[in-house]
Length: 365
Ligand code: F6R
Ligand code: MG
Ligand code: MG
Image (cartoon, rainbow, N blue to C red; front, side, top):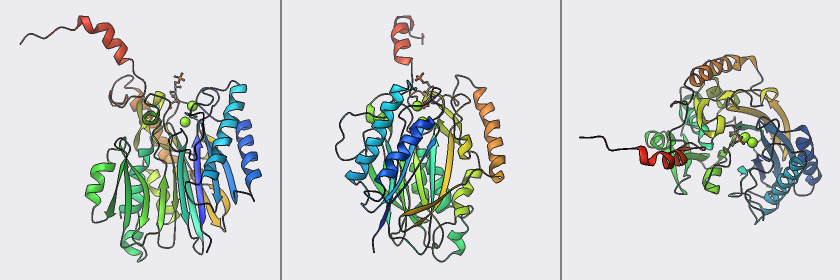
């Protein structure tokens, strides 16, 4: 049976005004380019944005890490960046970190989440896209969905997932990976993924090997060795029939949590689930936002999207996020609103230290 591959590849290639949203002309151009590739390299495609990030969702039969698919995404990003430059949009080409494509967009700026699978009788797929935060922001949600029975009742009462799941965790600093089996290794898993700036869940598998989730793990600051913008991650989760139900996958987003990112990638802020109409960053360049688009994958075709957070059931979490935003903003330049010194993506510290070096004196014993 032919397997279906779903590739969700994103990049910030310029926005307006400032870092708030993608211009409609860029969305149009990207969708036109992908639509032209349908029936050739692609089976289906859908283009959208979350804040200042252009999101390309593509289905095909080429498998993950396909040079053809990555090349197509790269061409869309570079051509859209050229248009953004012409329009003098802000940060045009910001995530295009290299001039020459060499077979894979990983490590070149864009974020990538991909999954190849044999379609089940019916295959619901949830695509999450975030702006103004980092890839580790998904860790909390993936744990809740696949390992917390207080969130996912199916872990307790559905024989199809009672055995638990396997989490593939990447250490983005040392570039190494490890597998954890849950529930038996949950506490060890949490030791790592509770530190999301360094340890990121890349994939989740059912114990029988079925792929259930995939995220982007690229950290632009580590790729470039300097600040080049937050990594604004994406994530895909398959649902139902022996996997968490759609409702169990989106349930943890009803609780507000605090993530790293927001203004200048250097502040903690509430992670706000919003409908597409609100996927634009405003207040203090945020707050960090997440959208969720639901599809059915049918012979590689994407039936949808359904805008999952455009719903009154998520009004309360949005209002709680606004409350938390007020509380954190009141801290101004103080931690814990501002990130710790080592995590900040912008810093004036080296310059200030140099200037004040001669004024520091030893405190007498
Ligand atoms: C965060 C982000 C924005 C910018 C901020 C300053 O990821 O994109 O918050 O960091 O608007 O941008 P510059 O330095 O370009 O003026
Ligand atoms: Mg930007
Ligand atoms: Mg962004």
